[in-house]
Amino acid sequence: MTDVCDVLDRLEEAAVKKSEVRVTLKDGRTFTDDVRDVVTEGGRNYGVFGGAGRIDVQEVTNCERVDA
Image 1 (cartoon, one colour):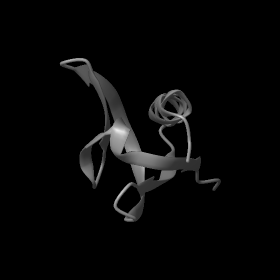
Image 2 (tube, rainbow, N blue to C red):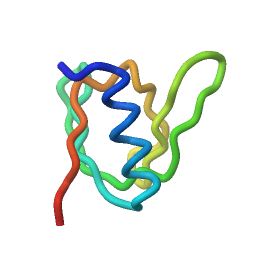
Image 3 (cartoon, rainbow, N blue to C red):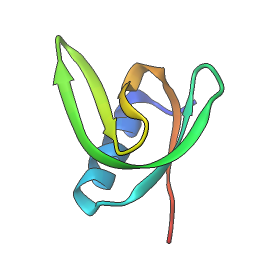
Image 4 (tube, rainbow, N blue to C red):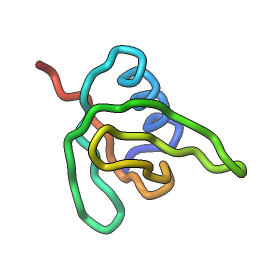
């Protein structure tokens, strides 16, 4: 399991660099997607993805860069 701060760092880096990440969620689902933004609303952090939409960072168990 990846620390929430590490997930935020990776998502923010991917958003700036316009790159993709591979994400694993608590329910076991995985996806690879581009990160459009990272936002905070109501004290919660969300990754905004091109295809997967908005995901609460607390639901992410792992986030890895996808090297081209």
